Image (cartoon, rainbow over all chains, first blue to last red):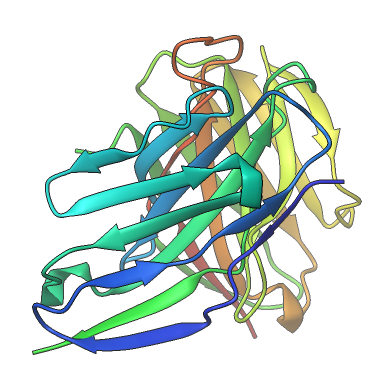
Length: 117
Length: 116
């Protein structure tokens, strides 16, 4: 069975600090996708990134970066020079490919990130 | 403008009422989903429709009844709900079989439901 664990329930940092959100996953499949979503107070889940299991290259997008390590089954998300607008709940999610698609996502419980001015 | 729109954004209903949540996707996708998000619980997948056919029903009580009349629209009909059904209901869509996009799921803004 697939599982996503986000051990950090809540993180609070001061603006401009760097912060890393942890994500550990479990799956029996060799082919899968990992995702990060951001949920601001309005409720919408905003897609941030998708990685497939064959691509372990780290990715950087502006102040956001992601570190995917299959050896530790982790897909961590770092925000550099955090800003108040980054305050939100962040979800890590997993999708297995063997299910043939349209299987939905398995989500972690989310990490509530608070950026204090 | 979001590619997935949900109405209403907020709904308060009594336990004996019948109401419906509506979702429309403008992304040309062929799969749609309903998720439930309760306080302090992980997001729960409720229903999946692929090519307008229901492919998954995760043991959801019958008081929740989905309807997918076409690939762009999805409804969740609500009947005799309980206070514990109060939650954020999120609609989403994806393109099944998208090897490039990896079946990325795009979400709407959600419908906040309160059952009194």
